[in-house]
Amino acid sequence: MQSMFNSCTPDRLTAFAMADAAGAKDILTPMAVVLFLLSIILFALLMRARKRMGALTDELEKSSNSLRALDENLTNVAMFQLAHKRDSDEFEFLFISERIGRIMGIDSRRLMEDPRSGLDIIFEEDLARLKEAFTNALKEQKAASMEIRALDASGSYRWLHISALPVQEPDRCIWHGFAEDVSMVKEAEIMMDEEGRKFEYLFESIDDFLVVCDMEGQFLHTNAAFQKRLDYSKDELKEMSIFQVYQPDDQPSIFEVVARLQNIHTETCDLPLRMESGAGIPVRMNFFRGSWERQPAIFGVARDVADYERTETALRESRKMLQLIIDTIPMSIFWKDKDSIYLGCNRTFIQECQLQQIDNVVGKTPFDLFDTTIAPDIVERDQSVIQTNKPLMNYSESHTRPDGSLGRREISLIPLKDAQGGAVGVLGVWRDVTEQNRAEERLKRTLDDMERFNQLMRGRERRTLELKAEINELLSELGKPKKYRTTTDDLL
Image (cartoon, rainbow, N blue to C red; front, side, top):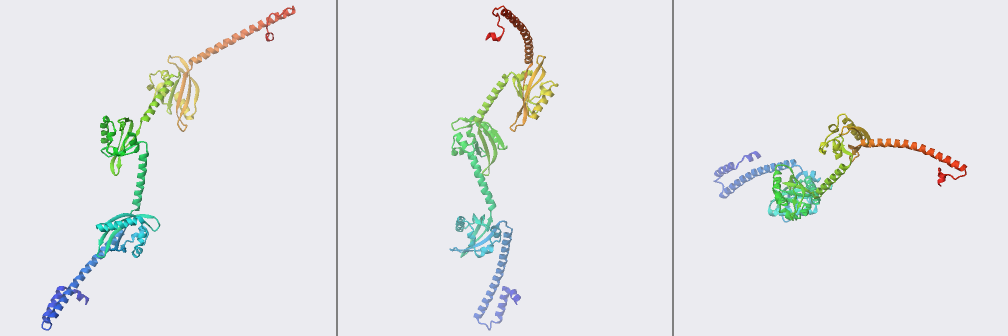
């Protein structure tokens, strides 16, 4: 019966109706014919509506299935449909993804039954902002989008990105939207902001000059040390370029530096900076390419080297004075590294080696300066001092003097030590003791001669005293006074 009913199309029903009307025209009244035709037409309209409703139902089912499939494949995203009654605070969830449970640890069925429980987990200040965003979106008929904080089931807060589009109906508004868990992204942004604040603090607190320019040389940022030392305000520098803080004669060179930095990553410049007064500041500026606020930029790091140059000058003067002092010492002084390579010496050493200048010594080894018969012994002594880390004092050896005569040399070697106390080289001092040895030999012979003479003189003096004693004794026997004083007792 149902199949027969379904097979009756509107055209067939109209034909049947006309045939029946033709057969019954003699017995039916005109009003009955009209009513019969109207019922046939109404039946046809109902059949068409049913067919259309079936198609809409199929489309709705397909749409729902597609929505569920999309929801199941979205990671960290929960879709929802929220119905809000017009001119009322009442609302309800028409649909909410089960994924909300994975994100917030909340059962989606609970939210469907008690939608206001979802408001209880949102931070109070964020809830006010969320309501304001939805109100404005409804007025302007556009999507609402914002980030809020909400407590999950464990008591930890998460960042959710809410985006929803309003669809107006006669008595209510349907919000179609999604909630995305952006906690990891937000935490990364917070960490980046924190690192940015630390970088800004370092940027502003460091004593070195720090600047940031665009790729054309226009200042984007300068630190306090740079502003204070050059006597410019921060706002003044923002209107300036890197070229304007150099002397006019040096600006072409800075143009070349910036031009090279378009293709290379680092560059160094030793030109002085120009203060607002026009005075110069000696600096060494290191430039490198980087990124500032997501745009290519040139970074510059410089240090006022005026103190450094003064210190370096004082150090050079000190070294000159030390070299002068060493050169005036009448002994050969030299120092070597751990491989017995000469690093320096004084003028006396140069002269003893029969050389002209210190460049003939520095970088050489004993094999370059001395006869190959004695060079190995020199290196062996050096290595012994370095390995034992103990000095060798007053070692004497023979050597051939510049005039060809044979002489004697007294050598002392002291280990040079690093900060940890390890030997890294040797300091040597030697002096020619040939004349000293000869003088000592002459002195020894003279002392020996004097000793023999004294022995002789002491023998003669003893005999003289004995004779004087005999004379005094004879005078005493004759009753006469003594004539000579021969003992210490007589002298008292």
